[in-house]
Image (cartoon, rainbow, N blue to C red; front, side, top):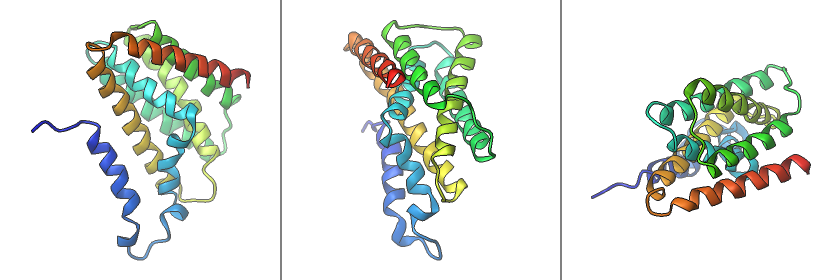
Length: 193
């Protein structure tokens, strides 16, 4: 029996949301930040599109880039979060996020392949803005729990994008380009809004 590669991250997130009654001597998950962190990338269209786009674009690359692009994005996402939590404010965070959505969408729409030396700094820079936004919007919850939540959701979204791209690129080759064009358009709208 073949397993569905998207099923495991979805089950992990779902089970963590349902696990609240089993936790002894802890505050509610929302108060601890885990649920807030899990939901944050899922409830913001800009974050959701960027995470999916990173996974899709990574799947379009060759060799090590398919793994290093999402890994770099995730590490720099955490770095941006830690910068914001420590009080360092990146300029024009929302603009940086909008540009990331637009550019990643264009990369997908044009089936852009890139050498690692260019791809990693680009996705790393984009991730800093997303991480900074997570840190700025965290609220009064546990920093560790919130970070754990948004990293888990971000990884699941990137994995879903990468897995979905791998499955459809041979069957529906224009679908990823249509997603990229839609994502780029929405990114441009976020930028001017």
